[in-house]
Length: 254
Ligand SMILES: Nc1nc2c(c(=O)[nH]1)N[C@H]1C(S)=C(S)[C@@H](COP(=O)(O)O)O[C@H]1N2
Ligand SMILES: [Mo]
Image (cartoon, rainbow, N blue to C red; front, side, top):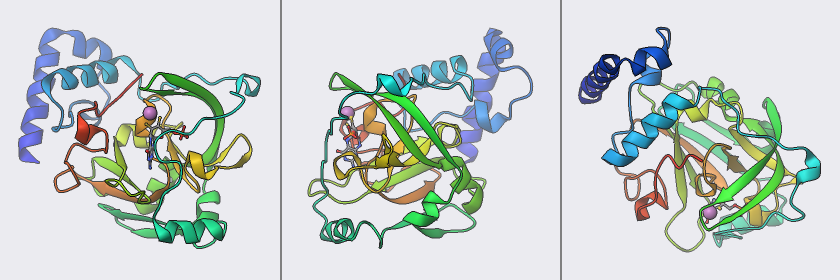
């Protein structure tokens, strides 16, 4: 923590020195929102992360489309059906027994049913999904705002990342993470509907993350647990995600 703070101050000074920081940031943003960089990133990635964060305003929205632009079908990629027996039992039951666990660095850990999640303030958005493998699809997603859930569980002051743990599917567990800025972004939702129907199993039932300014692999499907953490130490490969542990970029902005 002290280490990070020192780093933050140094980078702030560097930017103030360059003049650009003053111009872009203005004087009113909180230190915590502007000056830290994930300490897991390499130098090149850190530079692109910083550039993206300076260029995009905190709340800039990803493009939204009319529903008439929807792709005729929304393809499935990666896991299309988790093999975890507990998941399969839940799926047979229409996810009546599904629970979303929210824990880690929060004041109020919680376990929510699907009805609880559906009861949270929601948002509907028609957006384009871009996969690094070279395909895109437009779909309409409806989901609970992650910000609304976080306001209920109340992140502790040292919580920096939100980690999404997925239902097991045979290979190494899939997981993903985002920073607090993306967690509170208005288009960051725990989606339970795709094109007006419950999210199909192949697209992440009963709940998948939608994060509209990043690549497809950030959008964890089959979310079972949301964990707030200060860093990724001790979480699988330590890089913040299944593909990140295999060399992909963590921020993955588009
Ligand atoms: N649990 C889980 N989530 C995942 C994946 C996966 O394999 N398992 N694949 C990711 C990738 S690479 C993409 S492009 C999208 C695909 O979402 P879709 O199946 O709805 O098209 O999910 C992401 N989330
Ligand atoms: Mo992807």
